[in-house]
Length: 451
Image 1: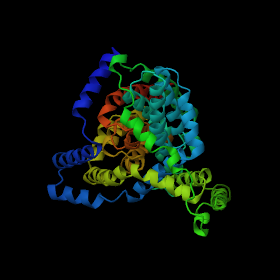
Image 2 (image 1 turned 90 degrees about the vertical axis):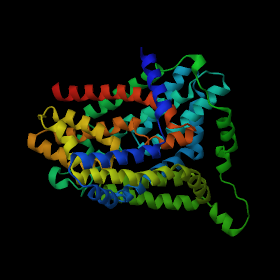
Image 3 (image 1 turned 45 degrees about the horizontal axis):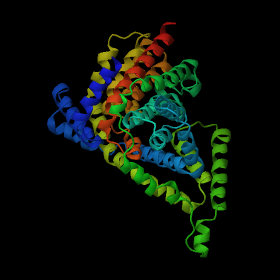
Image 4 (image 1 turned 120 degrees about the vertical axis):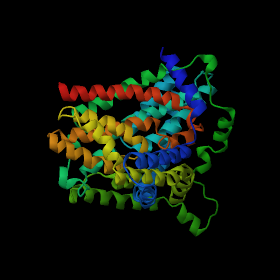
């Protein structure tokens, strides 16, 4: 049965799924039309909302791009890249390939969503190539899907945008809800329980989606050739000229000086100033890690140049999603959507309303920070009115956000860029992964609320 359902979705998306950028444009047009039809906003008025909001996420876009950039650099430093290659070599069967890729990406997601996306692409490609060399029959699109699916728990880790936001001094809802530390969100037993329940069941689910051997698509010869032509050895640290300038470019003590200064700053930030973790500090930490693991500053720049190719789609597409968020917020469309689910909620059922509305809203606003900016004020106001659990409501929004990330095209872009696939090849499997994660998340919320 599960094979038939999977085959249906795979065929559907192979035929009908457009490019991620086209999806962003279509969602913009759809949001525009809904605002005009359902909120009473004028055609010209809605166009102004869109244009005024188009650049609203520039700072966040920069943070996202740097997260991906620094994560890509860390994943491609010799120690980490070689370790991932060794992990790929441990795979001895097709079921192990799918489950192992999912597990590794999921573990990374608990530490950094950016690193998770990059490692997801690298480990899928490395396992696919290792299986081809060792004559292990695998379905490469499913392998990439399984690897990406581990990303589903990123909001339950230390880089989760919503828990980071509400824990940061001066966040925009602080007057309404105060500061909520990680001890009341990410590090609670119920949050950890949902994270680990997903982490240890999803790999088994993904292995069940495997098609018959004769239907499997292994890594293509073209992809294997591309890997050999652009191997990590090509961006190892090589000094081409014995000049003073070149020696300085490749003088590793400069790395150590930067790392030492950065570590001192982090010590003062956390201990001296008593401040917490936020996206800027997380990026700063990964910047230092990449500097520390690279062989020189010249080597680090080579790694950055290698990573730059994956950030273009984000720079192009995020302004469109900023425009969508602006239309939804300014026209009242987001308020209408959330009100549908909140209107009949109680203190106990509000987390379910937050989860479901967030999962829908995330299709149109696929950024944790951007979505929280639109939905957060509505949900926190409802939570205070109903005297609901503020940390739980906040994390319910986070769960909904991360659930539909599994089928939001812009999020998977880095994985596909590294793995060498088109989104239509993996989307059918991602629907199945989302269905399972949705079940786990809903059961987790039910256990928290009613037991």
